[in-house]
Each structure stands twice: as structure tokens, then as C-alpha cells.
Image 1 (tube, rainbow, N blue to C red):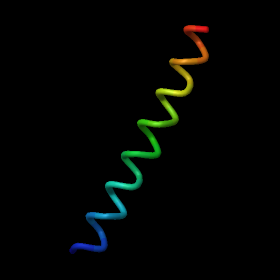
Image 2: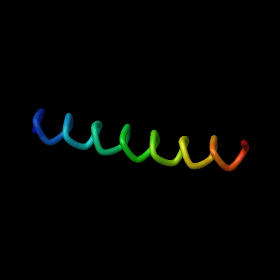
Image 3: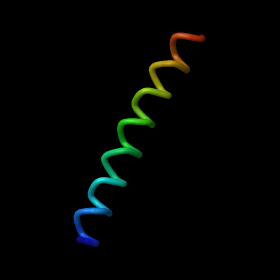
Length: 28
């Protein structure tokens, strides 16, 4: 359970970081 939760957290962070980088480059 804990392993699955951490894996999910990593996926969320990666997805958020990817989306933020696209938003940042679009702003520039």
C-alpha cells in the first residue's frame, strides 16, 4: 500500500512538473 502510494505521488509530481514547464515556456 505504501509503495503504491509513493509511486502515485511520484506520478503526480512528474505530471505537474511537466505541465508547469509547458505553461512556463508558453508564457515566455
